[in-house]
Image (cartoon, helix red, strand yellow):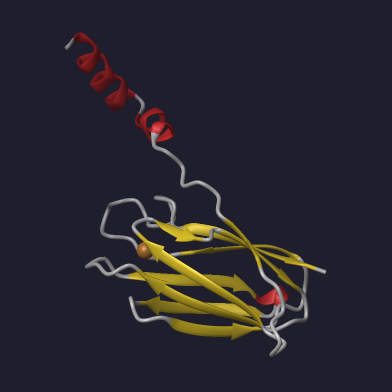
Length: 138
Ligand SMILES: [Cu+2]
Protein backbone atom coordinates (compact mmCIF):
# COMPACT_ATOMS: atom_id res chain seq x y z
CA UNK A 1 0.00 0.00 0.00
CA UNK A 2 2.74 2.38 0.99
CA UNK A 3 4.45 1.64 -2.29
CA UNK A 4 1.30 2.37 -4.22
CA UNK A 5 0.94 5.77 -2.59
CA UNK A 6 4.58 6.48 -3.19
CA UNK A 7 4.15 5.54 -6.83
CA UNK A 8 1.12 7.79 -7.13
CA UNK A 9 2.99 10.73 -5.65
CA UNK A 10 5.82 9.97 -7.99
CA UNK A 11 3.45 10.06 -10.91
CA UNK A 12 1.91 13.34 -9.89
CA UNK A 13 5.27 14.93 -9.35
CA UNK A 14 6.94 13.64 -12.44
CA UNK A 15 4.57 12.51 -15.14
CA UNK A 16 7.44 12.09 -17.53
CA UNK A 17 9.05 9.56 -15.20
CA UNK A 18 5.98 7.35 -15.44
CA UNK A 19 5.89 7.71 -19.18
CA UNK A 20 9.43 6.44 -19.37
CA UNK A 21 8.19 3.21 -17.80
CA UNK A 22 5.75 2.59 -20.61
CA UNK A 23 7.17 -0.02 -22.92
CA UNK A 24 8.38 1.46 -26.18
CA UNK A 25 7.11 -0.48 -29.19
CA UNK A 26 9.79 -2.88 -30.24
CA UNK A 27 11.55 -2.33 -33.50
CA UNK A 28 10.38 -4.42 -36.41
CA UNK A 29 12.56 -4.11 -39.46
CA UNK A 30 11.62 -4.85 -43.04
CA UNK A 31 14.19 -4.62 -45.79
CA UNK A 32 12.40 -4.41 -49.12
CA UNK A 33 13.57 -6.28 -52.19
CA UNK A 34 12.75 -5.43 -55.77
CA UNK A 35 10.14 -7.80 -57.16
CA UNK A 36 9.95 -9.08 -60.75
CA UNK A 37 7.71 -6.10 -61.61
CA UNK A 38 10.51 -3.72 -60.64
CA UNK A 39 8.68 -2.50 -57.54
CA UNK A 40 9.59 -2.72 -53.88
CA UNK A 41 6.43 -3.99 -52.25
CA UNK A 42 6.03 -3.19 -48.58
CA UNK A 43 3.12 -4.28 -46.44
CA UNK A 44 2.48 -2.33 -43.29
CA UNK A 45 -0.11 -2.68 -40.59
CA UNK A 46 -1.05 -0.13 -38.00
CA UNK A 47 -3.13 -0.04 -34.88
CA UNK A 48 -3.30 1.32 -31.35
CA UNK A 49 -0.52 2.46 -31.26
CA UNK A 50 2.05 1.09 -33.61
CA UNK A 51 3.13 0.51 -37.15
CA UNK A 52 4.51 -2.86 -38.10
CA UNK A 53 7.13 -2.87 -39.45
CA UNK A 54 8.25 0.42 -37.95
CA UNK A 55 11.56 0.52 -39.74
CA UNK A 56 11.47 0.02 -43.47
CA UNK A 57 14.56 -0.03 -45.62
CA UNK A 58 14.15 0.67 -49.34
CA UNK A 59 16.44 1.41 -52.27
CA UNK A 60 16.68 4.83 -53.84
CA UNK A 61 15.30 5.38 -57.37
CA UNK A 62 13.26 2.17 -57.30
CA UNK A 63 9.47 2.53 -57.03
CA UNK A 64 7.94 1.63 -53.68
CA UNK A 65 4.42 0.39 -53.22
CA UNK A 66 3.25 0.64 -49.64
CA UNK A 67 0.19 -1.38 -48.81
CA UNK A 68 -1.30 0.04 -45.65
CA UNK A 69 -4.04 -1.14 -43.37
CA UNK A 70 -5.04 -0.81 -39.73
CA UNK A 71 -6.65 -3.25 -37.36
CA UNK A 72 -10.43 -2.99 -37.10
CA UNK A 73 -11.48 -0.50 -34.46
CA UNK A 74 -13.20 2.74 -33.66
CA UNK A 75 -10.09 4.87 -33.51
CA UNK A 76 -9.22 6.41 -36.88
CA UNK A 77 -5.60 6.34 -38.00
CA UNK A 78 -3.54 7.98 -40.70
CA UNK A 79 -0.20 7.46 -42.38
CA UNK A 80 1.90 10.54 -42.96
CA UNK A 81 5.37 10.89 -44.41
CA UNK A 82 6.68 14.26 -45.51
CA UNK A 83 10.01 14.09 -47.26
CA UNK A 84 9.86 16.44 -50.25
CA UNK A 85 13.65 16.32 -50.46
CA UNK A 86 13.25 12.66 -51.41
CA UNK A 87 10.14 13.10 -53.53
CA UNK A 88 7.89 11.54 -50.91
CA UNK A 89 4.63 13.06 -49.71
CA UNK A 90 1.96 10.80 -48.26
CA UNK A 91 -0.98 11.76 -46.07
CA UNK A 92 -3.63 9.06 -46.08
CA UNK A 93 -6.51 8.00 -43.89
CA UNK A 94 -6.30 4.30 -43.12
CA UNK A 95 -8.90 1.59 -42.68
CA UNK A 96 -8.97 -2.15 -42.30
CA UNK A 97 -9.27 -2.38 -46.07
CA UNK A 98 -5.74 -2.27 -47.45
CA UNK A 99 -4.80 0.81 -49.41
CA UNK A 100 -1.73 1.21 -51.63
CA UNK A 101 0.41 4.27 -52.11
CA UNK A 102 3.29 4.58 -54.53
CA UNK A 103 6.35 6.76 -54.64
CA UNK A 104 9.92 6.58 -55.85
CA UNK A 105 12.44 7.82 -53.29
CA UNK A 106 14.89 10.14 -55.02
CA UNK A 107 17.33 10.72 -52.16
CA UNK A 108 18.87 8.67 -49.39
CA UNK A 109 18.16 9.38 -45.76
CA UNK A 110 16.02 8.48 -42.79
CA UNK A 111 12.51 9.86 -43.02
CA UNK A 112 10.00 9.59 -40.19
CA UNK A 113 6.45 8.41 -40.78
CA UNK A 114 3.65 8.61 -38.27
CA UNK A 115 -0.05 8.83 -37.55
CA UNK A 116 -1.07 12.47 -37.20
CA UNK A 117 -4.23 11.79 -35.21
CA UNK A 118 -4.82 13.08 -31.74
CA UNK A 119 -7.88 13.15 -29.53
CA UNK A 120 -8.47 16.43 -27.71
CA UNK A 121 -5.92 16.95 -24.98
CA UNK A 122 -4.60 13.41 -25.08
CA UNK A 123 -1.20 12.50 -26.42
CA UNK A 124 -0.95 12.21 -30.17
CA UNK A 125 -0.90 8.73 -31.64
CA UNK A 126 2.64 9.49 -32.71
CA UNK A 127 3.64 10.16 -29.11
CA UNK A 128 2.01 6.88 -28.12
CA UNK A 129 4.27 5.00 -30.50
CA UNK A 130 2.53 5.19 -33.83
CA UNK A 131 5.62 6.15 -35.78
CA UNK A 132 8.52 4.69 -37.62
CA UNK A 133 11.35 5.37 -40.01
CA UNK A 134 11.67 4.91 -43.74
CA UNK A 135 15.30 4.44 -44.52
CA UNK A 136 16.31 5.05 -48.12
CA UNK A 137 19.65 3.55 -49.09
CA UNK A 138 21.67 3.43 -52.29
CU1 LIG B 1 -3.43 6.75 -35.16
